[in-house]
Image 1: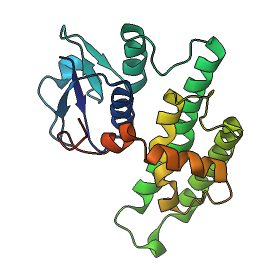
Image 2: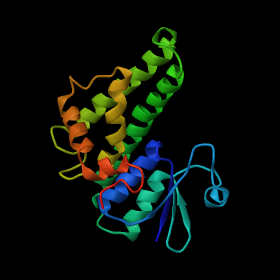
Image 3: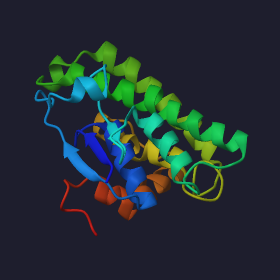
Length: 206
């Protein structure tokens, strides 16, 4: 059976777990603890980053999007549309989630870490949360009144925004005036593939 090397607290590993759960693709877990990489990681990924997918034949594939793209080929009828433009829109939504939501939120989190609110770097906070806000508005426009970001069914695009939509309000960015995006967040939060992706191995539903 294939194996996924992953961190439980990594948003990119989370996306791959949600994808695998949604598709019902079986795999073994290799959960890695921060600061304690396994000795074989350098051979699996020269960048020493996770996630890494190791195929049944022992061949490594690293990078969340590369893993998903690989599985879309070897396990057909997946979560990327066949239409080239819709497929491109999925990856564009993924880039928006990564560069416009996750990266600025991570930067805010680092600037706040261990500090009282009065000691936060407000220049960083305002700059990064403005970027998050602009990205949310773009995603709301992309949603355009539908249930899912690209087309009529859940795709990789929706999995990409599942985690950041859940955490934005922790950083003072409200979704109250973006009700359709808030509804998307609520749909994703209750989807079993995503619920299980948040759980440690052994606690997910069979």
